[in-house]
Image (cartoon, rainbow, N blue to C red; front, side, top):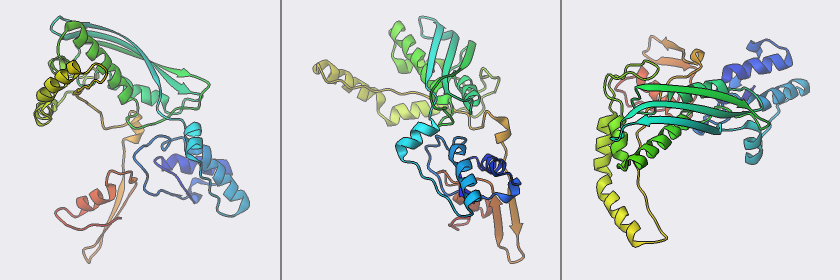
Length: 299
């Protein structure tokens, strides 16, 4: 028995394979994990299989805990990217075409780098409607520790590049960045570059509410006045939209299961395969089973 993180099934399979026993002989127990995610989906195997073999050979519990610097060196992290792009646009700031290439530093093994690149390509438009778009991803093998799943899973890289060329357009056209961004945003019913129809798409309402609640224009004017009066100290302000997909690019991961027992006394027992990582999973499961109830606690 040993602790894993997100990917319990592979932890079980790898440990069973390493010590030569059936997978049903391995029990994986997961405590609540943090929200940083990096290294928690696949890179655990570097240690979990080692301690499984040690425990099996010694016949006693074995624990291995890395220092934080060792952990970061061994398990890898977010994929560094290099991107090259060409963007076509009108004088009004309206985008007409985009061609972009992404080069991902995968490290010394494949790990989840292909799936990370998939999400980058799904997120290359961020929240903007681009009539003609072409994206190419290259997963590059290097002599560094293997990079892996990290919060956002490739989407932040794609969106950061999108905001880079969006800022370039605003600068070339001499237009306010927030004006150019709003001009190019998707609208209700538009199709993405992967042919998904956007329904209940509220980005324009969210955008206007944020501008108003943040007093954006008022603060922007005050910042411009401050920067004019101060030579060495400068301030800035920005607003950026975000569109993010909630499913996995590895399609077999888009599944879930639960076992529900309803007893004659009215009590309910729910067993599920989810992992608590800061999203309030246990509380939400109770709320699903007992709608309208004020019951609290953990499953």
